[in-house]
Image 1: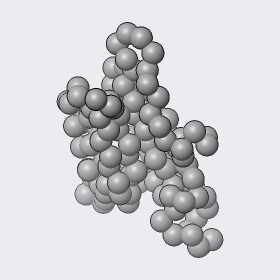
Image 2: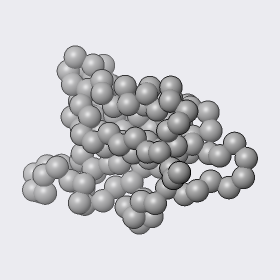
Image 3: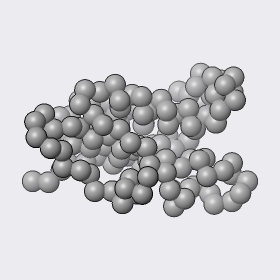
Image 4: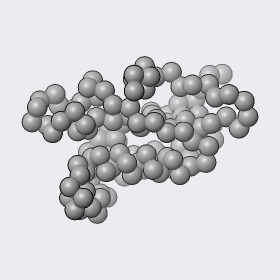
Length: 126
């Protein structure tokens, strides 16, 4: 059959890291497409505090944290795609084009031979 892909859309708080854990634990999954959502004060308070200290957007720090978690998995290639169509709110007051605008794609590299690229038009527009 074709590639087996897990999709996590608008996963709040601990759900995005949980999706990464499930991807890591299930070798039948070839790829994970993850679109994180809001940060949860129960799980992301320390991350928010660190972001404030660094003068960075907390959502961007969350995207970095999730990307790093995927990159730590063996044989996984990671890309972060951004597109205006991902925006949760198109108003200028939201905080710029980067605000809540990310899809994290993790794809397992083939143990041998070439990888079959995950077809994702948004990722190809990077």
